[in-house]
Structure formats: structure tokens, C-alpha cells
Image 1: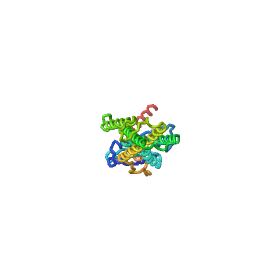
Image 2 (image 1 turned 135 degrees about the vertical axis):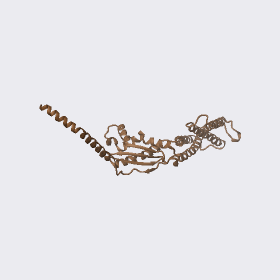
Image 3 (image 1 turned 90 degrees about the vertical axis):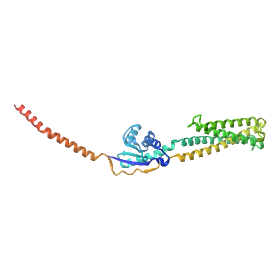
Image 4 (image 1 turned 90 degrees about the horizontal axis):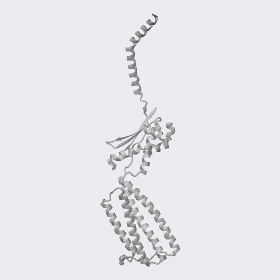
Length: 319
């Protein structure tokens, strides 16, 4: 005997939650994916349950026992699972939602999610770079005995570090924008122009050709020992400024994702089924009745001719 059971969850909100039909179809596709099937096969040991030797065979049996339906009007997805045990069918249906949440957390399904993931990766990398720069500065302090640059050197360090951080932050924005925009995009062109201007300013500072009001000192005039310390300090300041800028970009992308991200909500959790889905006893009874009726009619029609034929054959044999 098989027991059927349906678990329903909402259009992940449909338009009410900021999602269109394409998003609903996307989530329905995830529910039918091999990734979900593989998770459930391992979680419930379906190879043993179905008595098969290969995982792909268990996945096919699971897919054939599962129906994912979409109501286009209400944007509600229904998951129906058939199994020999009512409790097992209920657990499988509920497990689909758990697997969907887990899979959805690993996927970037929207442009905002992709931006958030991109900045998250860049932020993690920059955090490591900042830690390395701080270690190198500490080593230089111990070797040189210098504590901190003063006066004009400190001003130059801060100026150069800030410009480098601005360039790096805009380059990260440019890389994120290239994922969804062409080279003719006005925002992309603006970022390129700003990067070129900042690189020009940075080049002039390195050559000591800055404005006298900024009190920029050419690196060639700094003593060798202090020069190494200045470079390490400048590197730390650069990574600190860049880390702060990337943090702001990441928070902005995360807020955009939270506004765009659909909320997965269970409308009707799968419950213990109280009716069997198969075999259909009514259909079996009707089929047996129709078959018996047809068989009886055929027997009535052929009985007399058959008896006469048998009688005539018997008479011929005796003759």
C-alpha cells in the first residue's frame, strides 16, 4: 500500500514578497534538481529503502514518487510524495523544504546576491591582507626601533594610503559592475575615469611633485631605515582604508539583498496522511465489475453455439 501526502509552501510570496513567476519556476526547478534528490537519498538511506545498488537509481525512484506542482494564479508550490509508509511520506515531504532552504543559502539567485557574495569574498581577502601588513609593520618596528613617522612624512603616508584605497575600492566596484554591464555603461565609464584621475594623483605623490601645501616629501629624501618603516606604515594605512570602504560596500549589498530576497514560508506543513493514495480500491471494484459483466455477456452469447459444436463433434466421433 502506498500513502500520499502533500506539503505546500507559498510562492515564496509571489508578487506580495517581491518575486515574479520566473522566481517561482526557479525554486520549483531547484526542488526537482539532482542536488536536492542526492541530499534526500543520503539523509533517508533511500538506496536501502528502495532496494537498489546505485544512488542514481534511488534518485530516479524518488523523483518518480515526487510531484512538484505550481499554481500560476496564487504562485503556490505544492510538493506531493508517495511512499509505502505514511510517516515516511510525511518526513520526505517536509525534508524537501529543509533541503530547499539549505540549497538556497548556497546559491546567488539575484543580482543583489551576486554583488553581496562578490564583496564578501573581497572583504575576506582584504582582512587577511590587512593582518599580514600589520605583522610586517610590527617586524619593521622591532628591527628599526622606530615607533611612528612624524610631521610631513605622516601626512604623506595618510594621503597616499587614502588615494590607493580609493583606487582599489573603485576597481572592486568596477569588477562587480562588469558582471552585469557592458563597456558602454555610463557608471562603468565614470568609474574608469575616476580611477585614471586617482592614479595620476598617486603617481605625482610618489614622484614628490605634489602641491607644496600638502607638504609631500619625495621618497628619495627619506633616510633608508625610515623609508622602509614609512612604506610598511603606508601599506597598513592603505589596507585599513580599503577594508573600511569594502565594509561599507558589503553592508550596502547585504541590505539590497535583504530587500530583494524572497522569504521562504511553509503554508501547509506535511502532516500524517490518513488516506491511502493507492491502490485505488474503487477503480479495482469497477474494473472487476466491468470485466465480469463483459465476460458474462460473452459467455451468454457463445454458450449455445459452443454447446452445439461440442454435441455435434461428439456425435461424429460415435458414428
